[in-house]
Amino acid sequence: MSWPPDRRRVVAALGVAQLIGWGTSFYFPGVLAAPIAADTGWPLSMIVGGVSLGLLIAGLISPQVGHVIALRGGRPVLAASSLSFAAGMCTIGLAPSLWVYLGGWIVVGAAMGTGLYDAAFAALGRLYGSTARGPITALTLFGGFAGTVFWPLGAFLAATFGWRNACFAYAALHLLIALPLVLTFPAGKAAPSDDAVTAAAPTTSPTPRAGEGAILVLLALILTLSAGIGSIIVVHLLLILEARGLAVAVAVSIGTLFGADRYPVLMGRLAFPSLIVQALAPFAAALIVERYGIDAMVVGLSVIAAINAILVALLWWSCSADNGPVQDRGASRD
Image (cartoon, rainbow, N blue to C red):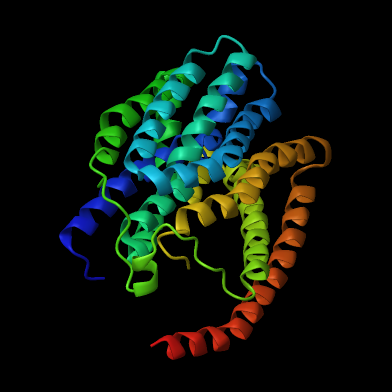
């Protein structure tokens, strides 16, 4: 990829912030849930449920976050996320009771909704418009390393300094690294479109494509089921590996389309159902494990994955059927 230097700097800065954000939220219980349960005596399902609560809050606010980014840009929203992450991590680290712990996850949930992929993608889409695909693809690479970095880091911090100090260290990462980086995010408006009609009438809502509604529904279902599978795997992967007889250290090492004017809003809408399922899935899976065991959860995941594969095929068919007319319309406009 050959991007201008400013894009490389933007993606690198935002990518490090994403790495920290995912590592201190979504990947939090992978290595810290067990030490928290051992130290406090709180039920493991409720400790994991804190992450579910945070994801639920993120899902509820995601549509509004998309609108705010569309109006004001990504920098203030991403900065607020870093501050919220730090506040939430400090609250969790200081929590004298389970209810305060869960309250901390409400704050973290607000940070997740305003700072993780969906908000970051919307911010890049608003900034770069139709050329945002490359930066978005590169950004996902950073988040993909969150488990690789933060599972060993979290395990080390918890074993050496205790889980509470691990939370304070996570808060410091947001204040000292993530916040200064997201403050470098450009405050410019959306990149100009090549479409003269859009440029001539920027305040007019574009007419949706024929068949767009069905495609968006299928895409939302696929993202929702994928999110559910992914959140269960991420939260419970180490538990699954340990149940198969692997030591904690070994388990940790193994574990390791739209235009700029509508992109932020559509991202918020698509993120809503998937984040709701992300919120509920880890808690539901924890209850299944407690009552029926790991094997029952894995069988359920397999069934959901099969359903999702069918939906992906339907999405591919819908996009293929719609592709011809879209090309014809583009050719006639040229």
